[in-house]
Length: 446
Image 1 (cartoon, one colour):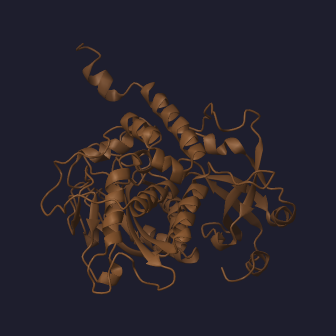
Image 2: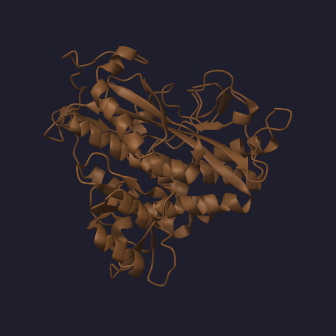
Image 3: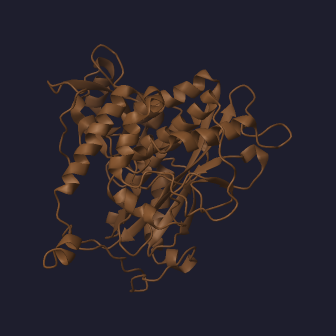
């Protein structure tokens, strides 16, 4: 947005403003206010939410927290003018603005996921570096089901039939849902979401949309809004879009691959390449940091019990942190290309991860690799699906995060504490549910 915020509101005849923050799950929380009330709040900082919005579970329940105030005090929302966009699926001119949060004394709410990413980026800025990312988000289209216990299935396309067989990169399979994707692209254009290619993935009615490369906070904001956009567009076409990591038993999982590189602020050059085009020492340090620290950062990239079901399938979802050039069986792929475009693709995060936290985890590992001059293991040139170098369930992952002091330093101790509280509470909530598998195989057999 080039105009000042209030001028933009006038020019677009805005009547309401959606004031958004991301909770731990990446769910947009906040308030919808008339534009006049929003204008008043800009001046007197009177737009407030309970601090406990960051201690809210994906179930909607709240955790007992050692960090968040017992009085359930309020925080003040501060709009980020760079994030203002129209909401294209409303008939009334409505704005959506991503907000940061502060306390009444002006101090920052460090448990906010967006602030966590911002703090990591600031560490790079102190090194005169600009993190560049490009997310790739996979998702499934599924039929609407009234009951949560009903297994998901692919929706009916324009042909009148549901897609049941794998159609990886199938053009006609994508065209089955052309009207929906036309809306998605129109909605993205209206919001200045810098999406690039659309392709069909290997699952039935599973799609992937890639973003162009850009600065980390801008692209993560876009990924946050994109997930909401896709879900809304799907509902408008009488289907659901889901970013669950593993929504269907016999289908592959959905990932959020994150490409990352670093630009020197003074020269504008990619620091992962030397002047002769060869990989730089800092490129290897970044890889080494990711191999060392991403196992402990796993809960930020795979935050639910369901997340780890995606990681059982081997090649489609690498279960290792080996690295290789154009090797899709490893967790850290280095795409082949020009030296100026040298980057690392983190293939571990699931599509269910909060984009702010998945990017923060990725960049935190890169940052620590640079600071500590970590050395990566030897490049893997063959299949790597038999390697298991990442936690395989949420309990183990949370225990690993709790022990990694270096990550606490980068991500913030308060954030790590609240995040751990939320995720362990969600895990306990899951364990209280008796699954169909248990009734099928244990009811009369044990």
